[in-house]
Image (tube, rainbow, N blue to C red; front, side):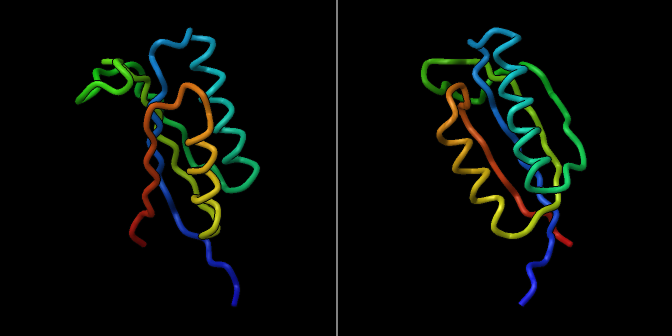
Length: 98
């Protein structure tokens, strides 16, 4: 059975405690990961926003939205990388309705 491509969106919240350079490195790193394993449709940087609740005693996060198209197995790998990357506070990957 062939692996069908699906559209996904992922919101990443990066620690606002990182320097601007540090935030940019994390954003670029995941942009590269997605480009290597999927078709990156867009990157929308929402910038620093207040968090709904504190995470690790932080009240602000840097939000980034990635839209991409990939095989069904890639989001699990992306989520794994989110979890092991320093500076990532929260992440969410959603499969878009066709």
